[in-house]
Length: 532
Image 1: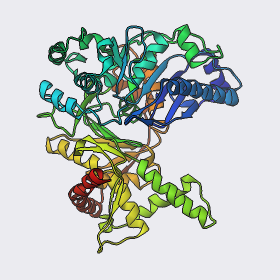
Image 2: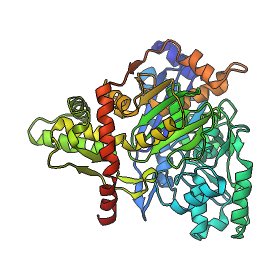
Image 3: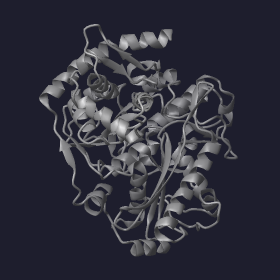
Image 4: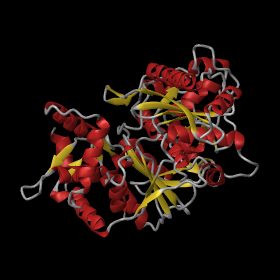
């Protein structure tokens, strides 16, 4: 880490890179220096709304959140270094992948933003998967578009463009309607051979839409996909004011292509080479595995996306992650306060996670489902969080927490079993997110769930916002011909120390027993959705 005076000089001279990521519950900004380490951070908490049975964020929340996040970063710079944030060397925008943002010719939003969390496009997903011979998840933009067309929604005849959240924000900042190829691969299938959208699938979709006489072709609606390192435009005067209404930030900053949170997670964990992967466990939970080859066939449980460099990635995605666990932690925190021994949330989580290690490997016969919302992988359109036990199970705090943590990984295990069954192999798997914050707990349970060594460390401490800052730096710093995985290995992660947790045989056997109960008990979950 460079000294305060040197950091101040780097900031005022613009020898920095800034990454901003719109996560599910927090918008975060990270400013890095020449050593790629964070100099300052900013954040703004936000939350989605469930409006008319749609998970959404308002445009007001998007722009207010961006301004508040940037103001928080600028204040951190001012407080730490005594200087104003006038410019940065490069800038990148990232956000939750997928979803649906549709605009008319004037650039106005035609329908409320539909996020990745919605499971309302089952018919479209099924039809497009059959049409393309390629698995199209419900949350992908093209599934939302076709579902809207199928439903005869009023706005579909006026669509001039569609985008992701990251692409939308980037367009407003630069005027460029481009998208990082990783994020673009969550809109429409990407052909790894060309780095663009699959032509035959574009043609097939346009032929299907032509029957409705809407007057547009999907190839004209989609943003242009760009690989990492390609220029994404420059910050306009209007864009600078969107970020910083005070007028301090100068225009002209180069931007990298906007990326999705899955791609920035791969970058932040140095998991962009074939046979590497990472598991992100937060509000949602997903595994990203960079493939050596295409899968043998489409699998409903697996999404095919790309790294920011355009390499094919198998994604096992689960809508539901830590939300239910957070609710239980809140309950235990209330109980502690009622006893007269209040504890902060960090202490509560650490205590509960450590308790899980004392539980039986199979959680003592207990069963927990964290389904706050639907899970397409297992056929749930909606979710009902459940905790279930049999009369002969062993109820204890340790087993309860073991069941909660194991239950978080149940749907992920189903997806990963598909990959291993298709012959996919991994050299390394990195875990990041709040699930891994308590040392030795989350990594051990994930290692048991996947029977694979899991590495954790501080390299992804600032998460996806740091990952998009690295992509912004790569766009202006890379040497001629230097590939993204070379840049990360040589310039960013060289000398990094990781802690690797190997699977314990008893834990693996216990999780296998838990999964048998988890799979059988899904009938209980479906009954809860139908009747509650």
